[in-house]
Length: 454
Ligand code: GUN
Ligand code: FE
Image 1: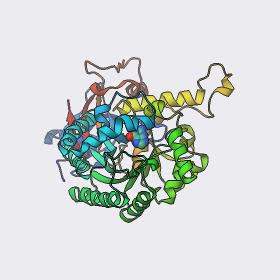
Image 2 (image 1 turned 120 degrees about the vertical axis):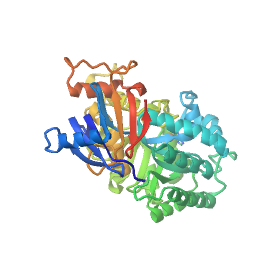
Image 3 (image 1 turned 90 degrees about the vertical axis):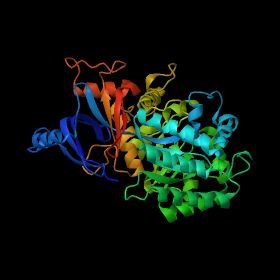
Image 4 (image 1 turned 30 degrees about the horizontal axis):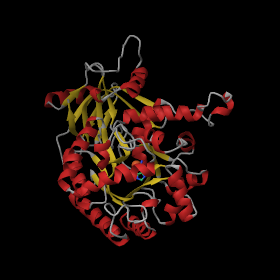
């Protein structure tokens, strides 16, 4: 799809490299007819003024006012679309009970496509308003409802990777909510992949299908085998839960005699386009394997406080150069906001690295290494997630998709208070990462399309 080119003039923040903030002070961003960033011109570039004037005259210039800043769009690397109605409730039991008691009954209702459409439309609108320009979705076992989610993302303009969930093991999945058998689960996944590819046939599709075994405990070996073969055949993304809690981790060890990561690898499910949610209990060997395959981890710090029994070793994963991004894990995580995700990642990392038992001496209290910085947290929510997905978004670079947020720190309801006489642009960025809310997100673009405008 082509659209009118436009230009945007103002100050942007991004973290193109992990841990490094780049302030693009008073730059000009030129967006092409494909919704891509054509050029980024610094104020001293010889063409800067002329191109800005030309866009102004053409009526295609967006000029940021004082207190307004541009950020790359946020990337949710792990979210359960059908759990939207439960967001913020039912977090009183451990994961394995939560699934059976609350989650499977809710997800079973998505057999009704009308119900699915209503929930998914509300979800996608709300995620966009919270600044999530790309989402990697788990849907449900139902192909029609999952296809409806893909259509809604396309219509509302959210970049999305959508998976029909596979769960076929009668030992772990209730009769009212599971695939009939491994064969039909794999056949339905194939049909789903073809259907999504048919609704978005562009060279750079906005919506893509994802092979989605829920987690090893809910799938038979035959289903995992079949899905691994599909991953090979179609080369599409794969997502699953990996070593999330003591229970989930031990279940796989007792069934397969190995860790989740090595078991997934045996089934051909660990690829450059695989995203493993959580991965709290991965071993150093698992880290090496995940890194060798080029797979990534969706770190979901808020959900982990409830379900994981441990904190993901984020510093260790980052230091060895693994692909890592952030997931909200709605509704295991109760917030749809990736700004909140950044804050929870910062808190979790601080707790892990400093330790939490005041009775221990400081040198025995925590894990080795520094907690993550707010630059690293924001990188996880943007460029880190994009790299894990292998998508050209998450930073302001020529050739990348124009997926962006306009943050207005001067809206009446702002918790971000900037005093230009006291705060540097670096300070403004930190304040935004730590305190921006939905109220500050006054415009959102995905692929150059203005999908939210307050
Ligand atoms: N493991 C398997 N399914 C789920 C789920 O829906 N949420 C979380 N957090 N973990 C899971
Ligand atoms: Fe999850």
